[in-house]
Amino acid sequence: MAFARWDPIRDLLTIQQRLDRFEPGHAGWKPPVDLHETAGEYVITAELPGVARDQIQIHFHDGRLTLSGERQGHVCACEQFHRVERGSGSFSRTFQLPVPVDSEAIRADLRNGVLTVTCPKDPDAAARRIQIT
Image 1 (cartoon, rainbow, N blue to C red):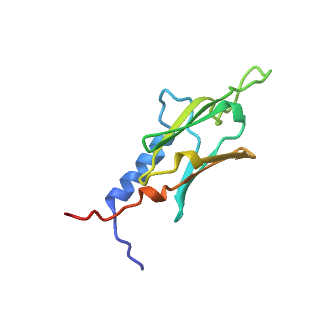
Image 2: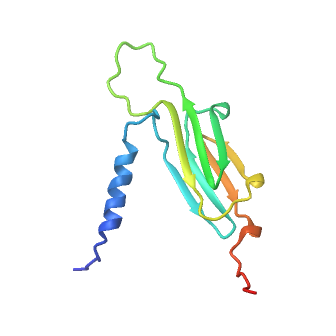
Image 3: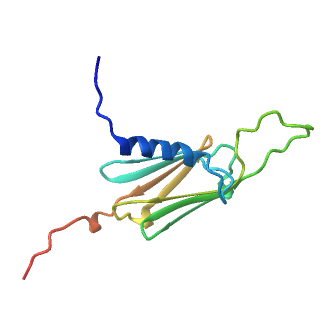
């Protein structure tokens, strides 16, 4: 039998993330998002099926990237829905990026319902040693 070290903080964060996914708030829904880092950039990937380019806004201010927009509600000539699992309405997701980003070089691409935002790190804002005089 293999033993694993219990990390209560990790478990609590996992539970919080699962609850946040279904949390009712001012936003109509929360699209799933992945954020990963490479040596030179941050890459944010969001699933936005059914959302057109002109319905998405991307803002970067003070080290925070905000994705927002709206997906139209269900348009159906039916009398009754038996199940509705796809969210609609407005959404907003904000991410704090820990290293300064070159805001002029941020790129966004929407293909097949997947939005990819690439945020290059700012090499001029890298950590440096300050000489004491």
